[in-house]
Amino acid sequence: MADRVERLTNLLALLLETRRPLTLHEIASELESQYPDAGQARRAAFERDKAALREIGVKISTETFGGDRAGEMGYRIERSSFELPDLGLTDDEVRALQVALAATRPDSVIGEEALLKLGGVGGGVGGPIRMHLPELPALPILRSAVAQRHPVSFRYSGNVRKVEPWGLLLRDGFWYAVGFDQNRGARRTFRVDRCEGEVAIDSAVVFEPPADGDLGAALPTNPLLLGDEVAAEREAVVHISARRGWLVEREIGSERILVRHDDGSITIRLPFTNEDALRSWVLGFLDDAELLEPADVRDRLIEWLKAAV
Image (tube, rainbow, N blue to C red; front, side, top):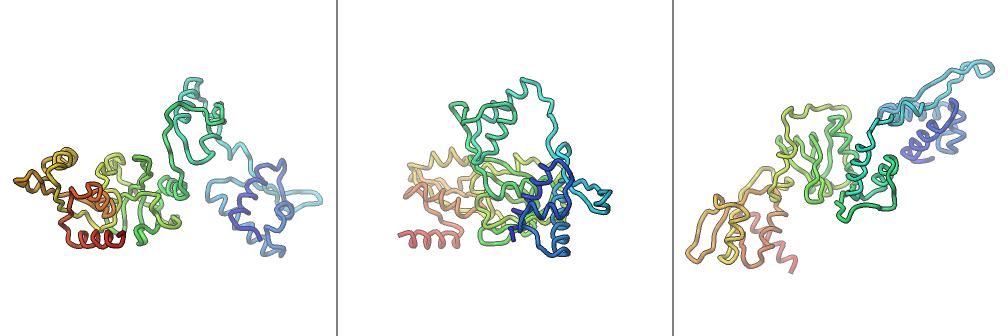
């Protein structure tokens, strides 16, 4: 017996390509061994498949035969109701889309196919600078959840999270999902490539996103606030050497300096929700930075360094 996803894909292709309605018997014959042999089990499996296709917006038309086939039902998908209609783009609009697409490089064949459908040329033709757009298995699921306003659940930093996704943003080559985290009771940002395992959609629930939500503003510019490895925002206290103090002050601003020491070094405070990012930031300065607080985070950093040694 074929995998159900494979069977659904084959059924969709068959009903799209047929020039006449097909009976269940004909469908089962064409999709050899993909449906049960028993009549009742075959009918039940087919009805489930029809319901699954209709749930994602595929319209299956039916026709009742007459004559010597009276009472039999035929099925097909009208291509005109399934395929995207002519967008009515002007030549300039088509060229603008081709230029925009040629400037990107998705990690899939989708971009290449889209370019061909717009009348462009394939073969990787593009400008000298091309932006990398990562494709991840979770992205189509998250995009669907955003569009249909369904909550999603996934594992992140070892914990199961349930999130109402407001949107997806691309920042510095990484995709981020922004939304309301039901576990934390607050807005959170998740890096999509760090979601562990599969992302599941709760299609039985529909949420209402904030009316005035600005996704651009929702994504923190501070990388230490990207993600949610801690339950709420915390503050780190870090000592920076004199030779690096000016560089750090320029990066974080003078308002975050707690103490200016006589030797020219400074002690600063940094908000963070991503402990891994904080650790990377501190270690990036090598001997010129020392994490002082929080004590538990400092202890974990020391243990991490010992393990690395």
